Length: 220
Image (tube, rainbow, N blue to C red; front, side, top):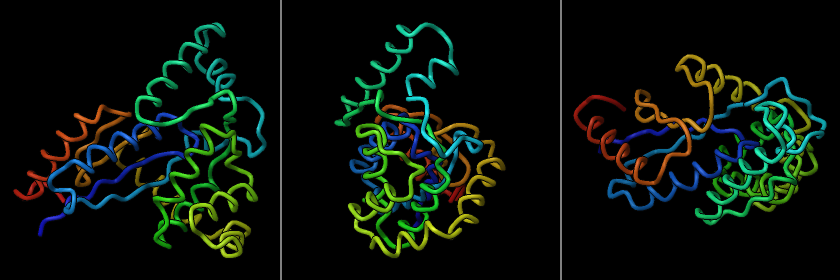
């Protein structure tokens, strides 16, 4: 049976990535060929040189990087919060703080390896956008991973060392090879890329097209 692989490059500190995940999940759940789709989550750091120490909130960071006055930033944040709410997600972006996400990605590599990737990914993404969880704080990551079903002691051992660092860097290297420069980015059959938190209907259409091409020998 032909299988379509969908690689998803995402960052745990990217609110748009959570919206994109939810929309893709909905499209895949309703897709007739969903049992023939294999999803691989990939690591991507939006700010690989970012500090591990929390400072600016997400609205403050957005205001600094994108410019405009605070009212314009508030409108952007309100729009994103409303879009998230339409997908059943709760956002409190005034609590979220942009930090280095490398250790969070190492955790996700471990969680995927242990078969708890979906549960831990959901917990981390929700905690970041709704609870102000600091994604660079190891104690916080251990706690959230435990809530997603991972053993706290084993998780702490992973995070205290450099386990899965090579896997994170390999994902990021592959992203550069494919020209992925922002997230979320969805690559279907290692050939066809869709960027951004697209509507459910777009993901559904691309899933159908990509699987048909895979069946015809045009992809993987």
